Image (tube, rainbow, N blue to C red):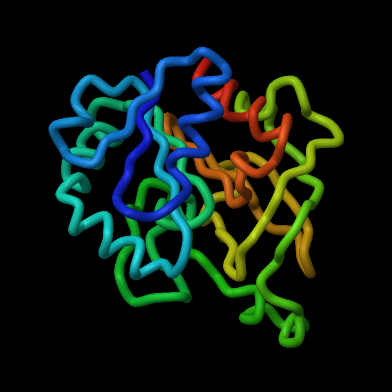
Length: 204
């Protein structure tokens, strides 16, 4: 069962629709009790980092999710701000992240030479998988996904980068540590590439 974490941010129904079309069982969890029995978790997110963390805290689900991911090793996929929440910290806010993937979230404009880069980074961009990550099975070449973001994930350890893209600089647009996965782009807006990635996650 794929469980979409609904803490008030992200296009929940879009993910539900994809999995229903694929005939893969899916449910939405809005309480800690609804999370029990989940086999895989999806953590979507849009907007600002601190606001997303605050909303997750307020949902009453954070402690249960943390246990499921850290102790029970339930696979989880963070998407967009949901991926950024996997980090330790973010330039966008003051609150600590979930800390499931060592690293920090940086503004593109914090990088020397990118002071005038147009933000947000919006639209389709090429994605190059690294290390044979299973999320990208079947489209290791010519993969394109839809992006909408002004911050990017800087991994503390290079081996945690699962895919790279380029916008002013090469940046990690997907990360993974053990049972934790994250993608900066929006698979639910990325047509057959996104559907393929969500299917691959379900089949991990």
